Amino acid sequence: MTAPAWVPAEVRFTTPGDWVALCLPPTETAVDALVADLLARHPELEPRRDLVTSVLRSLSEASRVAHCVYAGGAFLPLPGGPLPVTLLVNALPLEAAGDPPDLANTAAFGASTGRRHYSTAEVELTCGRAVRAEWLEPAQLASTDAAVVSFFTQYFVIPQGSESLLVLTFSSPAVALAGRLKKLFSDIAASLDVVP
Image 1 (cartoon, helix red, strand yellow):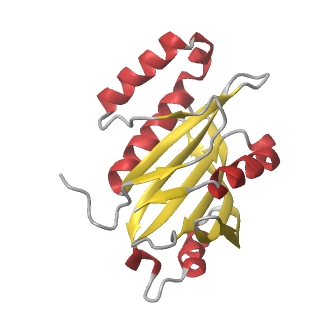
Image 2: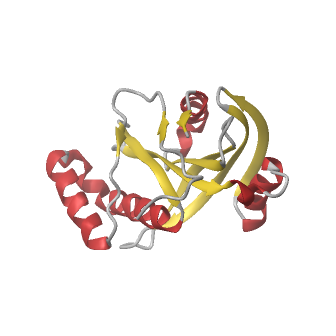
Image 3: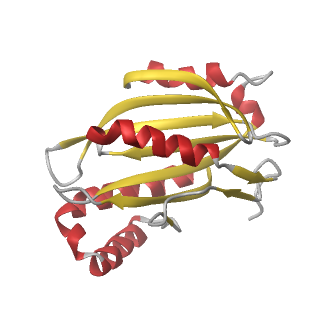
């Protein structure tokens, strides 16, 4: 299947050395196989099996809903156990930002979905003007009654010379590190380079 003309050929970032790009599994069976392989290589993640599975299932589902052009992440080595940090990039047709394109209005939609502490700001990235949205969101773990609160940051950007709206979605349940994560997410977004 050929990608629509508005989907960029490639997106590139500068990420930390332990960051890995993911080939997202298309089915739940493939997610389970990936989790098993990941835990075999990193047994220290076993106590976080439910969280790892939940994160990978969410990424897999999101990649099917919109044109996913990049997915990646890392595990933060924290005293209570490693926690994931992820980035998912989706390409949407330029019309998704309105006619004429209005990034602030596009980002403001998230505030109406009941996200906690939702805020937006206009920012300049190397590849073009963007709007950054940040919020906290609880998620129920599949195999327990426990809920995990995650910190999210999204960048809505129309790269110069592009026919698409890119949505960069960063997330991590390491809410206590939100200040440091904001800096990490900002640095990665600032390094965005797009090949049309």
